[in-house]
Image 1 (cartoon, one colour):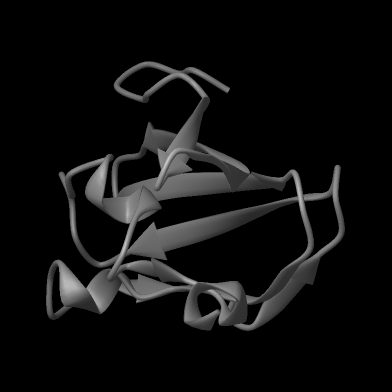
Image 2: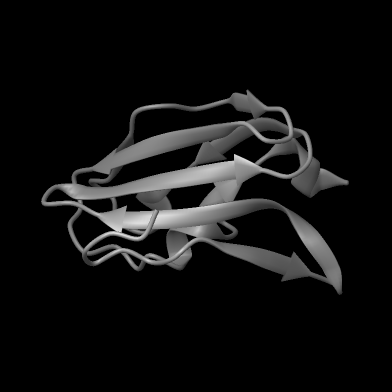
Length: 99
């Protein structure tokens, strides 16, 4: 989902392994839309945009995705957040991170 001012979907890697999701960010007039597509089970996926900007808020939290499923988080209250920062720790977290 590449959009004007957004980033193309990409698979992030960690410790030489394929990451459990693909993330795409689209900038909006009031913040951003972050779409996550699961490649593995993602339990209690939550976006914490307030870790980038104290006024930022998100519309969803604690979402569980099965492989192939997607969710789009809408971030408001902060314009111009770093798109890459919205797709990694400590902003994007899930229970799978704790293992």
